[in-house]
Length: 239
Image (tube, rainbow, N blue to C red):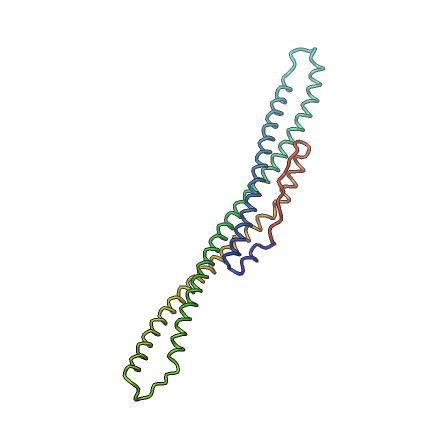
C-alpha cells in the first residue's frame, strides 16, 4: 500500500494516523533487527567453536598407532568444515537481513518524524483558516450594516458622524482580515512543504520495505538446518 494516500487530506488526524503506522512499522523492524542480531552472534560463536574443533582435529598423531584415529579425525574434519560453512552462510544471510531491517527502520523513523511535522503544520493551518474566517465574517457584518447607505443630503450631522465611525471600523476590520489571510497563506505554504517532505519520506520507507521479505526468506533457508529461528512476523505496509 501507499502510505502517502492517507495524508492527502493534510489533516492533523490523518497525519497522526500516519505517525502511528510508521511507529508500528519501526517497532516491527526493531524486533526483527534484534532477533537477526542474536542469531548472527550465535552463528559466529558456533563457527568459532567449529574452527577450534577443526584446529584440534588437524594436530598430527604422535605415533603410527594413531593412524586409525587420524582417519577418523579426517572424516570429522570434513563434517566440521561443512558445518562451519553452513554457519558462515547463515551469518551472511542474517547480516543481509540486519542491513535491510536497519535501512527500513531508519526510513520509517524519518517518515514518522515527517508525519509529526505534517500534523503540526496541518493544525496551525486549520487554526489560521479559522482565524481568517472569523475576521472576514466580522468585516462582512460591518459592510452589511453600512450598505446600502440611505442618508439624505440634509441628514443630521450625527448620522454622517455615525457613517464615518463605521467606515473607520470597517477599515480596521479589513486590515485584521488581511493579516489573518496572510497568516493563513503562510501556514498553507508550510503545510504544503511538510506534505511534500512527508510524501518523499513515505516513498523511501515503502521502498525500504521491499527487500525485507526476500532477506527474511533467505535467512530462514540458510539457517534452517542449524538453528530454529523464530522470525518476527512483519505485517504488510498499511494501506
